[in-house]
Length: 278
Length: 239
Image 1 (cartoon, chains in turn yellow, cyan):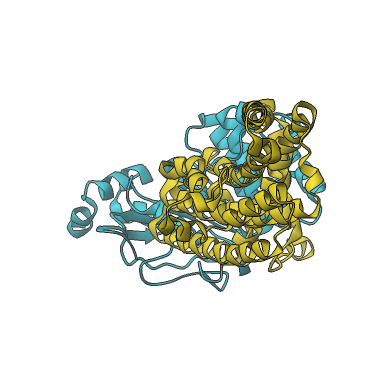
Image 2 (tube, chains in turn red, brown; image 1 turned 135 degrees about the vertical axis):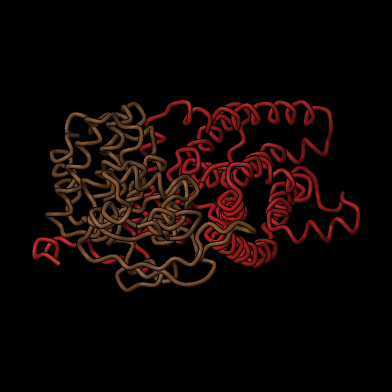
């Protein structure tokens, strides 16, 4: 080895490096900054949905006593659902950017570790979510007088639980795309919708048939949406629901990571990392 | 060995690279060159046997050595919407390069990228993109450099320019280079050893001059055709 090399050799990689996580976050931020349609896309659909549900809630609340009492439940549910859905989508789309740009092999032969990659994707899901959801919550205040932030600490508990679920699903879906190529891309866009009826976003769990209620209680977001209704209708913060949701999320998150690692190993066996496409 | 379901991509090959050498991996399409390189990088797990790079078993111990290796191929791209500078910054940080700005400036000067640094990577010509990919591959001053058809789709002038830079890098840094190529001129010019693969197996392995003499040919292209058409064994037997 030459003296020149010895004096300028790259630093041996640490187990987890903030610099590598930062590099990946910077990579996605460069991309967002370079593309206004990507930014607009983050805001457009949540805003449209919020306006539609907001006006519907306004109409119903003028005609039914219960809904008048439960003011804001629909809008609240919609905004929380968006946190769940957009959180997962933000994670998965950042990952898909690597597939679309055929950059995955470059990353996989670099010192970037899977855990660093996942942490960078988690950070980006929060960034993308914030870009989309903050303007929409401001719209909800100005159009319907509904202030999501007035939920205070409860909102923090809801947010943590929903983000953990969105990351667990996002990590698993990324593993599927890694292993199966862009043929599995549609899963990234649609997988969350299976949770829409089952986690009882807009109605209480008791509406479901008995056997399906057992399924619903296995899904962490169910605890959040039940907790939100308890808060907005009965004005009670259900800490028990939040803790149960958190415990369940720990299991989901561990399962998502285990699934991702297994699919990554399988991709290494099948040669999918080299193909990185269809 | 690497077997995909029922297809044997690489069948029981074995070779070691001399530190500081440039070796060519020759073979037709489907010969197993890219799979071999991917196994060396830890992107693909061998079905049996093992690959060791700089003393580390791949892919198991890859994080011990990945910062000392790099790879370039026209078939693996970099994010097209990012500028050249942004792409190089990201990869420099991933590879733990100490002074990122200085290294990028150094490579930009060396690879004639100064005027391209703030242009989007996707808007460059294929020759320019190859130079950017080469800059990315040299960012961390790799001790082991793997190249998969580095001059494919380049015009002869640009290809020659790239070869000169690779040669220079190897001389200055003493790097070990493994080059998969279909370009025999490139192989004759750069490589001191040629490993010829066919259907996942190594069918010959020697210095270019020795191969020419053994096959009684004037160029590696003719040797390659002899091997590809199965005439190598017959010619050798006749001699």
